[in-house]
Image 1: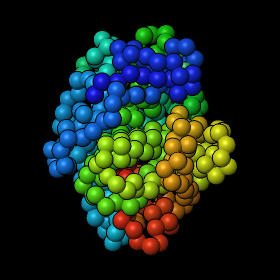
Image 2: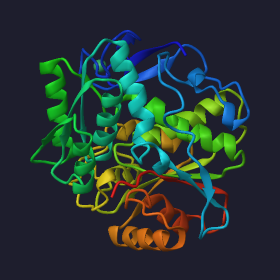
Image 3: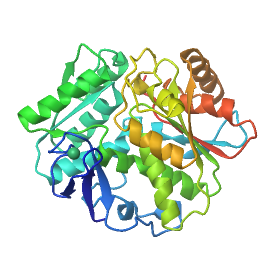
Length: 351
Ligand SMILES: [Zn+2]
């Protein structure tokens, strides 16, 4: 769909041929604004043309997404959105294909991103697929199994940073400016790609009451909220599902901001759930504000509970999911006492 970009900090607008996801005037992050209400055409979830709700561009079809929604082995009214079925076993692929498609459209031959693991694996994978160079900056807490996966692709230039995700992000931004590489990561195009997860849930499960979302940079959370608003605005749903964003108690900057009503403040990540170990979420303030407006909430689960949830999920389902991925399951058990129809996003399984 036709669109333009707007800076969420200074409101400066850019046409869709602007080749960055960062504002040239204030370095704020940009957001996609469509020229009209995005509207899906089909009602059958197997044949939906998602290009109608994505930024205009050329993206390969049938590679990512369309993951299964399966019954929870332990909870009667709960279904699991199996994002671990994507090619690099996490939801990150949804956004990577949009970002890399844009990088190709704008004529870049190199992409760069910061990551705790999954993002870099996904970006390295699609860069290889599109014949581009990839440089990835990994935080010092990056999961060693994920580093192995990234290196096993053979092409990406892997740089370890002595610091957390936010330090790696600074390095990626600096590199993109210096070398002219397309900056990928938790920015506007990724958010658009990831929102399709919520479209798929709502189209397949028309009566879903609650959606539980693991939260790191809050890009997935923002995408889910955007999809719900678009589905409502286009008349495809009458009732909006309640969204519950979930962080680890050992890294909960967005929960704190949501509870206090203040802006997000940096928290030093102490969690072992590396995929959501983000001390200062990029989309934190905008996600908290929209979540509040739509009647959603933020929740926290401590690492000990994440570990026991991971073990139980493995024993009951045979699926080994990441600690971050089972945050949705753990929060659902704690908060959905009335047994409402809930969907939990199982976000990744790279371990
Ligand atoms: Zn700006």
